[in-house]
Image 1 (cartoon, rainbow, N blue to C red):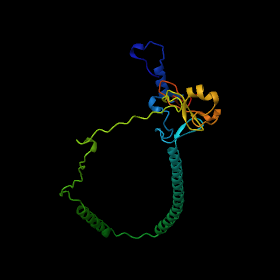
Image 2: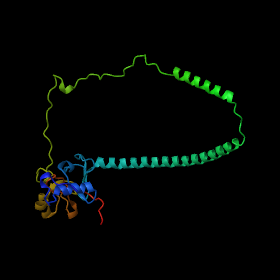
Image 3: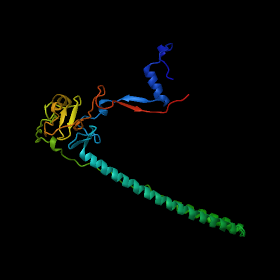
Image 4: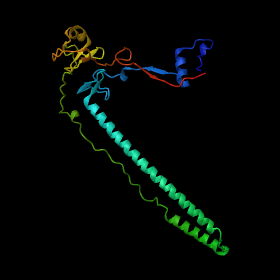
Length: 267
């Protein structure tokens, strides 16, 4: 358990910080953390690529996706499955070859054991006068071969360093002119032209695919249940609330807490 501070040795209060620290160190219980702004996507970003959508599509639950990202994800999954299947077939063939090699090696070991047993029955006499001379000759030949194969270090060492070529950056030349900035595009409501953002609840109209604010839906569209862009009749299913992001301090349409369930200590 975490020790109290030097000036609080007599205190019986178990602080929240000490409790969190002990929980993290013990490895038991559910650990939760509040997400920051960087961990939450904006309302106009794809749920797969987390980048602003160019060709957006929305699910019935209000989750926004990039059409190209969906196709790339499906293609990536097919390619990944094909790679895994190929690797599995290769592993299966390797296991089959290993089993065949093991069976052959077992047979070879049996043959070698049989040969050693047969050779050990009849022993050849050893001449003590010639065996020592052969060993000395082998040692001399080994010493001479090792001395002749030693590499020489007298030659110079070649350097393989290469210098990077110099180049010019067009935007830093004296003749370069500052580029003209364009007015940034902003998402607005298709009816009221109000600026859209993470702090404004939005909805998608299914017939026309237009994005409007929830305030416009409540005050204008639900009065006659007609799409103001296409003129089609709307039902409750045709108005899809768009899932939006938020900040780490304000609630929105997403879960702002991440939880990790760990084993529970039982008495």
